[in-house]
Structure formats: structure tokens, C-alpha cells
Length: 98
Image 1 (cartoon, rainbow, N blue to C red):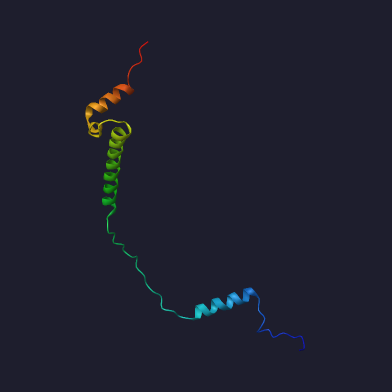
Image 2 (image 1 turned 45 degrees about the vertical axis):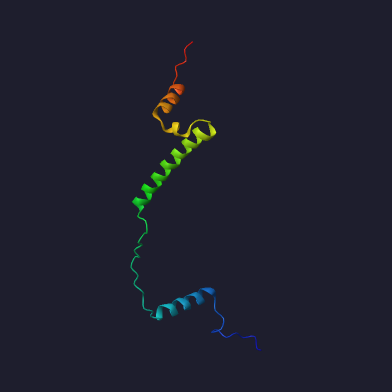
């Protein structure tokens, strides 16, 4: 070995990147034309919102019945009567008289 380097074998990183980019540019690959995929939903968004609202109302009513009937030792059917709620509102908003 004489210590001399062949210039074609040793390249800097910038030169390697440049040569790779040139190789990519010279190759002609057919470009795929992709349109935007249309997603068909099984359940539309507006129906999902309605379902969530119905489930929220049902869980609230179930919570009231369980809370009043099971935890509060009352009759579960009384939890849905207007007179029960009027009594609760009266207790909460009762005026304090001294």
C-alpha cells in the first residue's frame, strides 16, 4: 500500500447525500394518484350523539332510582314522582327564619 486513496472511494457525507438525491431524481417512478379515501361509518355521527344523550338520560334516571330506593331506603318508584322532587326542592330552598 502506498498510502494513496482513490478519490472515487472516499466521499464526504454531503457528497454521498448529493449523489443519492441525483440517483433518485434520475429514476422515473410512476407516481400514484391517490384520492382521499371516503370513510363510510357504520353509525353516523348525528346518531352517535343521540345515542349518547339517551344513554346519559337513562343512566341518570337509573342512578336516581338506585340512590333513592336502595341507598335511601325508599320506594324506588317514588323517585320518579313529581311530589318527591317538589319536597326535595322545598327542603333545599327553605327560608331560614329566626
